[in-house]
Image (cartoon, rainbow, N blue to C red; front, side, top):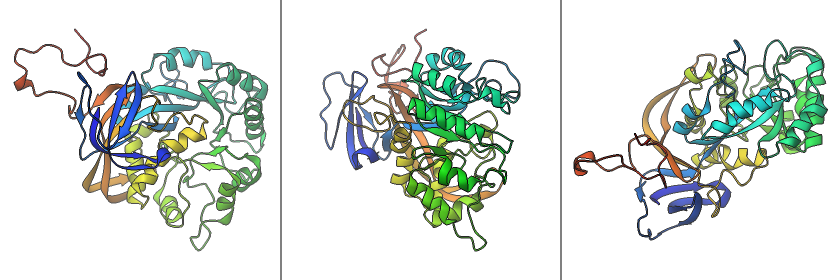
Length: 401
């Protein structure tokens, strides 16, 4: 039982003080006052925000292959050391593996992680690896779609990224694969070239429900000479194209984001583009990215929506990103700190802010997987000659020696 927290659950329209009851790994009840049953673990979360577990739809977690300079290798991170402490309970790998090496990624990472890992598979068969990404012969729509249809519970989309050439072939084959498998496409547009304008990408090449990531990248033709957001972007959104943050190590700058947000061009989803470079630079983690948007004037409710129910809907998994009764008990408990904070974009420019989100507690599948300040614990001085604390019913942080 999480007692007395401020629940923000945009999918269900809840923005109020509520108790949250968990039973058998599921959300059992969300109500103003819930009487805890005998033997229930009750955690006081008064003064904190209780939200659905965060859903980060752009990460790179294909780790462990040992391949240098590769997102199917040394650029990838094992997820659990970075996601759970930030309140992320579902992460979507954005094309690190392709239709050829997805089974290895599944065995190596997906099947071994506490975090729920889903995947956009790359239209490039060998995945996000420099020696293959420019090879048009690696881009097979039928093969990518077949792999997606083989693993429908795990593969949620098709990714194309980093292409340098003038052709539209990577985008067209990704869309073809997405159409066959009935899943969205996520596009990292690579090198922006006049032969394939970004405006054409979002105005005609992408389907409704397809995702343009890195939306505040410097290369995106976003602002006109008077600093106004170009109308084609609003028209593309009206057409159903999704715009995702994908902060990363080089794809978010304040001089694009701030004026766009002031004019209403806000993200549909907030994502990190987590990898071994971005994690220690301006991005850091999803809460740092969310905090940037808070300090740029986006409301807390909207920021939570952009990090929970919106991304879940974009990947056609509406069972995630909410606290509906019967849904998996994936929960983030957040503290909104007030003070003097600094935030850095991917060009190294700084913004000062006065709000910052911190994750106090993460619950994944009904069990505690992160507890920053030990709010689920008893004071050691009251325990006497104590042994291992906690119960496997609600606790996944203590390993019995």
